[in-house]
Image (cartoon, rainbow, N blue to C red):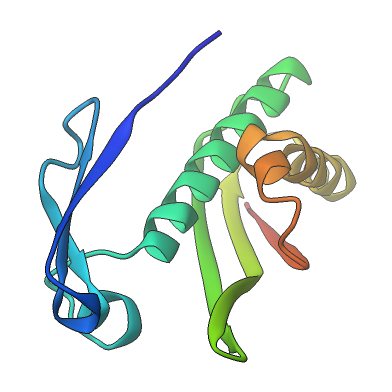
Length: 145
């Protein structure tokens, strides 16, 4: 069993409040976030959706790399982007879509096998499983030659 830890310290009320996110590894240390970085275009901080997207992209990419290795294909490079959509529903918000976009360079793999491994990684990575409540999770996988 593996456990990882992250924490937040928040000061202030609502839209005027400011949070600081820290992770056990120190990858994020008192990293700011707040209303502006979540709902507006303030790029001085992060937001939960961006962090969720990074986690999903990282988990999926690793799962895909492991699946390729297990199938006998050495990956040269893999790039994954995750777009996480936050939509207002009534007085609240919901994450209703995550779009994964994979671009990979893998010698000697055919398109069908590439797509099969990518879909399997999307279904099988632990973060994908944790996000099973998101109504729409799509994957566009592009094999570079």
